[in-house]
Image 1 (cartoon, rainbow, N blue to C red):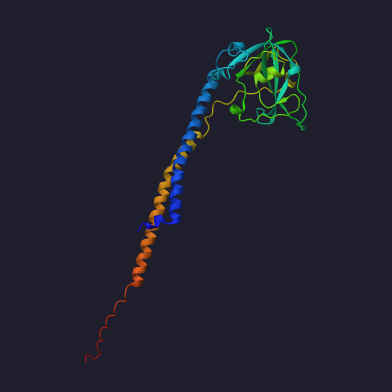
Image 2: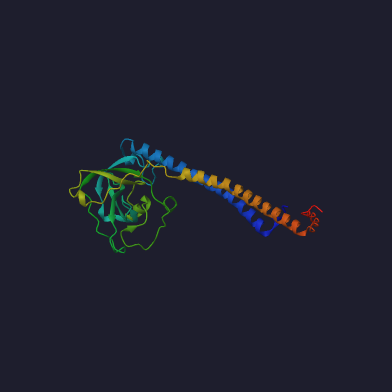
Length: 280
């Protein structure tokens, strides 16, 4: 009865089912891991944003790197902007997800060290091969406040670094690379995403668009996707069993039909005599 399981069609179907089951289980756990990462990230952002302001130099160092757990913490730095080594970071989004540039300007402090300041977003313009007009930062000594971030790499951002970019453009924010480009100026690891400047610039409306804090209220749908994948996993053997039972039912029906066709015809019984109307 079940020899049909050895046919090519059923062997392939069974192998596909056996492949789908562990694959869907893995996809479910992958989505669960993404959910856990999102929850942990939201907690980190929430806790960091609620922390008190701290001088940037206390959470990072020249040639060092901020602790990943200190990301998004409010930090401050005091110094003068060095526009001669200002660059823009390509393919970055504004608060409404419009793609343009981030403006990265070193802030040189009294001790000679530099802190990289992401001053915000500007439009890329129509010609991506030329540097756009960048609003000048406030002159003189300023105190900047912002969110602390770690250096970017291809591994952490998924962005592929490129060579041959137009002068004044970079793909990622990396303090070591910027220190080298500035002729070896000692630079604090990581960078600051600007949220406020004191004194406030006179042309505040013309300054780059300040970047909002990342959303930390939504956990996304990863947990629901995990449940869906595991439900799909249970559906695979259930579907295989349904197909199996249907195949068995069809085979039994075909065998019964064949037996009926092969059986000899039953002899016809003689017709009963018809009674005479006159009773004779």
